[in-house]
Image (cartoon, rainbow, N blue to C red; front, side):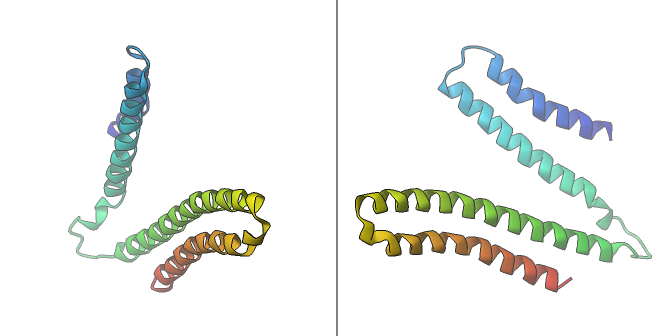
Length: 138
């Protein structure tokens, strides 16, 4: 348990230390961002493996295997929904910005531009469809 706290502390403090050491240039920002991303996903993978490591233990009773599979299904459904809504937000923001710019130039393009905004919303619907498919199998 102490190892996890040390790991979390290192992931939080290392980018701060790298950022404030030396001159703050564009390369310093990139290095800090890379350390943050690698640290976040490293801790995410380590925590997931640590949290579900009791599946690999040879248990003659095998009582907890059903709960672990259900937990992973709920986790995967949440990740699918979250990532799809983030993608939808990014796509809708860019499409709506371009649509407003096109409408301000020519008002006849309103119908065409709203179609592209609506297509970006389909990403969230696909994510929910996959999440419901995953949860339907549990």
